[in-house]
Amino acid sequence: MRGRRLRAGLPSTVVAVGIGVLIATSTRATTAMAERRASVWDRATEPADAALRRSRADGELAAGNDFAMMAMSPDISAAERRRLFGRAEASYRAALVADPNHSEATYRLAQLLDFFVVDCVMPIGRRCRAGVLDVTTGREVVELWQRFSGN
Image (cartoon, rainbow, N blue to C red; front, side, top):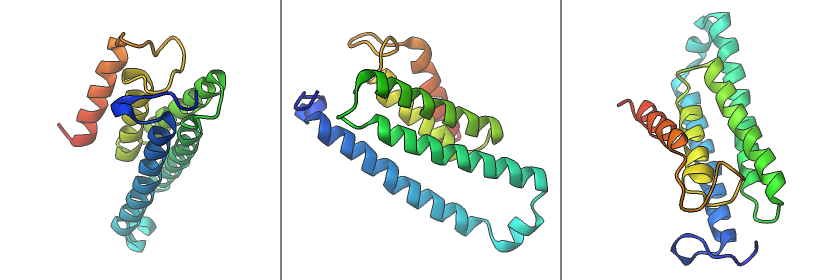
């Protein structure tokens, strides 16, 4: 897999590292923004069930981010990439079940599906075939982007 050329003539390692940096950078930025928005008073007056849902969603989001970054490694087998992709997708979906309005989980799931299934940047099996668009996943990605952007 090493040295294989992907989009715009970039080696696969550069693409994977670039996406990994994007995830790590945006994770830090959105976490800091969320902490600033929720003051101590906001957290203290938050109902217990809402705090529990938020905590579960944040935990699933963190797990999804870890699995997604590992899945982007160019040095793993296709079977391992498929397994890690599945774990990342399941974690992001679990975060959205815990908190359906979790914007970062919505964004991450859309980004993950777009990268691995729609754009098929790194092969993950049947859901990703070069030149063939999985229409169902493509529609889901568009719906997730629209939900994230508020449209």
